[in-house]
Image 1: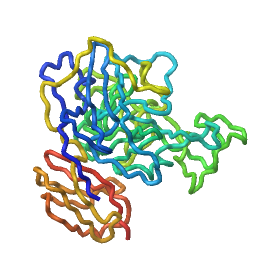
Image 2: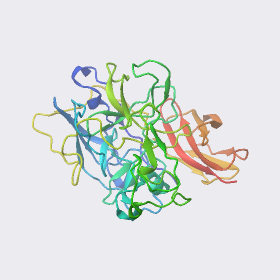
Image 3: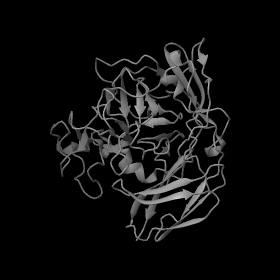
Image 4: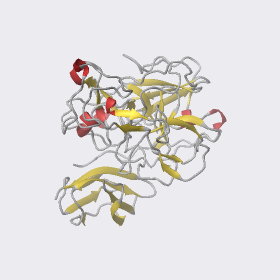
Length: 414
């Protein structure tokens, strides 16, 4: 299927007088050209306003990259007309931590909503064994690992692999969003050491699957009554089907129970608390995926709960226009055909005419290894790649040059 949409002029903003314009202001992908995406709706962030206290992000919740289809999902993305509020002065919550509930829990830098690891269902509707959205709804995610909720809110429960380069393990990941406590959300890679030193590595969750065959206890060891039991572990309800299938062990990974840590980053050289999305060596999402069960910081009202996400900026806010606007090398900013998919012995590729050449194509297998590479792939040429030597399975196809990048799931059947 053709992916036909205009290349977007979006802002990867670098302010020349950034003294008063921190990352919480300049990190957003602004749509400065009125470009449209799914359903003819304007994409990314339409307006960034700020004062000394908060940043207000006006967005449709429609990304600039191609989205859909969603097998088995009857919902359709809609213009949500959100105005999210992000505090510029985040503070740790020294009292009872705020639960990360259903619905939006933050916003990606393109104005799309961040959801937590849970869908809205639980076993026998008791709220004890809560369904893992990636397990139950993942087959209906699109190639960018997102889908629309009832009402049309397009969102990602897991690392948004079309928003940044999930294969780049040699550089610190960029800020890809903000949680509603005001702390940044980074991609999957960071410095080994919290003081900003050491090699770049993939950040590891401190949650792990439990070694259970019966769902008769909570992760903290609480014994449940028979009426509260979950389904026995089976092929249908494998470990990982429910959030309570995981247990947190402090220090077992790089991140805490909120799925973040206090550390130095390129944008915060003096240090900040920040969340990281978590993926495995196979580049697939790893629980809790984005933000953990609770927020680290104090959450402002207006962003969470029913009807939230429609804040009114106060008078006197400044509209951020940016001193420099450049064309962002946004992942999935390509129009191409990769077919057939699933493929067998040959995978065909055709990139629509664009003013950008010399792509490198890579296929990455389920262990994270690059198993196929082709350099100097050009637009307007029909390629047929021999993949007969590769075993069947799910692969990530990655196309990248100096300007653009693209990822897509590819299935090989043998």
